[in-house]
Image (cartoon, rainbow over all chains, first blue to last red; front, side):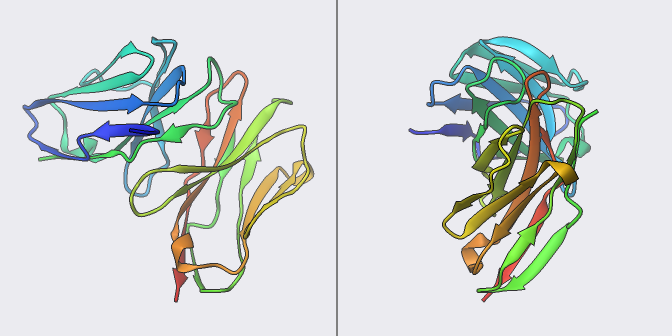
Amino acid sequence: ETGVTQTPRHLVMGMTNKKSLKCEQHLGHNAMYWYKQSAKKPLELMFVYSLEERVENNSVPSRFSPECPNSSHLFLHLHTLQPEDSALYLCASSQDQRGGSNEQFFGPGTRLTVL
Amino acid sequence: AQKVTQAQTEISVVEKEDVTLDCVYETRDTTYYLFWYKQPPSGELVFLIRRNSFDEQNEISGRYSWNFQKSTSSFNFTITASQVVDSAVYFCALGGVLFKTIFGAGTRLFVKA
């Protein structure tokens, strides 16, 4: 595997389900990100991890819970989601310990539909 | 506050036409970085270019060129002789040493054969 991978690519879940999104980067980067992309909305930064520590949480509802067990893996745990949470969830990584000075490399995203 | 504006929501061109995607940014920082990303229908954003605020030299890469002008706070992207494969959403982004990358709303480009 190369670059940034995400699984699953598509996910349909009910509002009472619990599921997890997985991201893995094979680039040796030290920062990882979760973004939400909704129709006709800019990319919304959700969480940032640098050296496995969460450095940013952009007022994301608690029904989204990130986990970064090591610098190569990032998870987004989902529970009791709402239909408005349906979106494309993108993971990215960069060689970046602070700020936004370096380019990010993105995975293909998980298309989430909440029924 | 930092902001990125891509005023063009959608652009439609015919193959082989040249097209310019506009990007205007706002920041009070003296050190910052500008990026362009391409998002094809597959969904994955692809990094195209990074420029820092101290380097206003324009850049050309094949059919792609970028015009960075600090005087107008713009970082425009031109595709020469567009091709159908250029159809995608293009995002301009602004990053800094002390703030995370901020993305514009994106410009959807349709290139018709």
